[in-house]
Image (cartoon, rainbow, N blue to C red):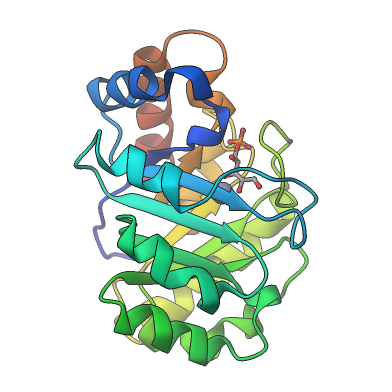
Length: 228
Ligand code: DX5
Ligand code: ZN
């Protein structure tokens, strides 16, 4: 682990919440100590599922002041970025596999005045993001195949988290490393140990138990991982 002390943040993924009571889910997560919300945008092309668009981001923005981490699992991210920035997204995270010219997407998102992140599917190597490290705010390492919540964590991606941590530390970047997919109290410590700083948690927050208890258990797990 690097010696840099960094904040570890928990970002409940609203994809796992009850869509008919999103306001209740947001309130419970805020009261339980969430640091941000993660919003999964799916277009039925880049991933085989559909979720929601900018209108839902806007509705969530109206209910919370926490940062909104918008995960764009869509083709042509640059085309839709303005709508998500306008809707109140704090960070727009696009997939490297969906962009022919990732540097151009980064420029477009930055020009909108919001933060930018680059996401890698489990099979996409670290090399693909390396050239962008000096100009992004987040590297999102997917620990499941994108498209659905409630899948099992793929531990093989931890080596990519370690590579991203060394790459960012080497250039003095304070960018976050986000880990997304199958993050639970059991899997989070290893991700924290590998250098992740931003933990996207869907089912482990919203399915089973209470949101507050679930978040407290996750908080203990990431803290334990980062100090071991
Ligand atoms: C999957 C999404 C994830 C998902 C995580 O495509 O990117 O953000 O909501 O859900 P869990 O934590 O249940 O795997
Ligand atoms: Zn996601």
